[in-house]
Each structure stands twice: as structure tokens, then as C-alpha cells.
Amino acid sequence: MSVSGSRVHARAAAMLVLATACWAVSFPVMRVLSFHQPTLLAGTTNSWFLSALGVGCRFLVAGLCLIPLCGRRMRYLTGSEIAQGVGLGIFGSLGMLFQMDGLAHTDASTSAFLTQCYVLVLPLWQSLVERRPPSRPVIVGCAVVVAGVAVLSGMTWRDLRLGRGEIETIIASLFFTGQILWLQRPAYEGNDVGRFTTVMFFVMALCMAPVVAVTAPNLSACWRAYASLPSLTFLALLVGVCTLGGYLLMNHWQRKVTASEAGLIYCSEPVFASLLALILPVWLSRFADVNYPNEAITWRLLVGGGLILVSNLIVQIKVAPTTTPEAA
Image (cartoon, rainbow, N blue to C red; front, side, top):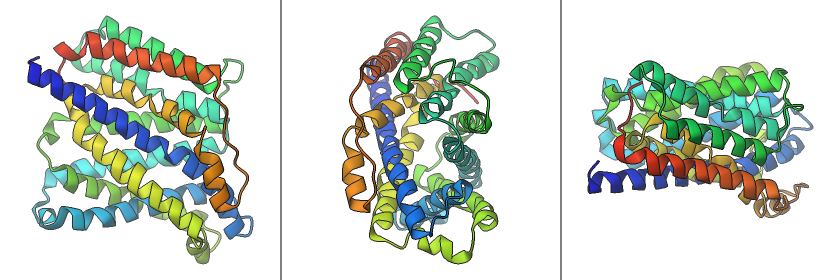
């Protein structure tokens, strides 16, 4: 890899880390929303309804925001960009829906651990495609990142059982794996990021519409769930930072690294989520008038986060100079 190529690769890795930081903001924001919205809905706590409505509103608004940003470029939308956006939207929406509902039926620590299953699936997929085993740095990096996520989440094997929440979280991770690989497909190289991301956002919103229709207690509940300044503010944060920020970074930069590398980098998300949980909950809860205390810094954050960082350094130092993005 040339010096300029190495610089692009390093910048891409840094931008994907920034994307994970943007996504991490969603954890405390969605958590405080889960406390606040039932007060607007007279105690309605149907997790499927609130999950689907949250995903649908978030990506519908993000798609509407992208249309004027893309401007006249949307007139040149191609069939390839539509196919790419539809695939990303289906994988992403189903993954988020299963993840959010699974979180309502299992411990947050277990959810955080199982969500990262894609870090193991991606190297296996790469082995099948390339018909050779993963490189030693990738194997070591995967082992270290699994250990880091386990420490960070506080998950123990005694806690791990296959109930509804755990199964849904594993299913979500498989959909996220599909999303990563779909974005990496060589057939979509050269597509306009703004255009296919717009399609992706609208597809994600559309996929949630039937779930909302089936699970909503009544039509007015869809409006009342966001009929307050705090809920609208939190929606704006989810749209601006977590959706537009995170996904535009992902869709632009991921192709410049391998899918296996991307999977390892995305495991940084729970580290940022844990760091944000040290400071954001009290501010958000005061604004929404709910009880959501800050978390305390622990050895798990330091050790688990350190292991995740080390795993990425192993792969970036050993693999980055010699690899090219694999096909999906």
C-alpha cells in the first residue's frame, strides 16, 4: 500500500471511530426517551410500538433532511444506488428493531455483548469468500475484542441464556453483519453516498410502518409520543448526531477498509456509550424530568475499553498496509 493509500486508510479508520461515537450518543438518549414517553402515553409501554415508532420517525426525518442537502443530485439517482439503499435500509431497520426490542427483554450488559457477534461472523464470511483462513492478526484481534466487550459489559457465562431478548439480539447482530457486507459490495463502488443514503433512510422508515400500525394502541399515540419539548429535542439529537452524522460517515468511509476491520472498529461503540453514560444521563433526565442517574467509572470501563482499543491497534498495525476491501 502506498503512503497516500496508508493515509487514506488511517483517515477512514478514524472517521469510522467518529461514527461509532455518534451512534453511542443514541444509547443515553433512547434510554431517557424510554422513561419519558410512557408519561406522555398514559403508561403505554409496548416495547415493539415504541421501538418501531422511534426508528421510523428518526429515519423519516433524516431522509427528509437529506433531500435538500443532495439538491439536484437526486435527479440522477441510479438503479444501483436504489438497490444499495434498499438493501442497507432493510438490514439496518430489522437489526435496530430486534436490538431495541431485545434490550427490553434482557440485561443491558448481555445485549451489549451479543450485539457484537458480527465481529466473529465477518472473518468467517471473509474466509468463505476468499477460500483461506483469516490472518493471525484478525484472529487475535477478534479474540481480544470479544474479551474486551465481555469485560466492559460485565457479562458472565452464568448470565448468558437464550431467552427472547438474547435471541432477538443475536438476530439483530446478524442483520448488522448483512448491512456491513452489503455496503462493501464491489458492484456499488462509485455510487453517490448522499443519494443511496437517502434511499436507505426512507426504506428504514417504511419498514417500521407496518410494525407501528399493528402495535400502536391508537393513532393518536403516534403523535403523543413526541408531544413534548424533551421528546422532540431528543429526536433532533438522534436525527442530527446519530443518524445523519453516524451513517453518512459509515457509508462514505467504510469501503476504504475491510469488512473485518470495520467490524472491529464498530466494537468501539459500547466504549463511547459507557463514557457518555458518565456525564449525559443527569443532564438529559433533568431536562425530561425523569430519574436517570449517571453511571460511575469502573475498572470494567478501563480494562474492557483498553482491550477493544488494543484489538483495533493489532489489526491496523499488522493488517492495514497489505489488505484491500473484500467482496461480499
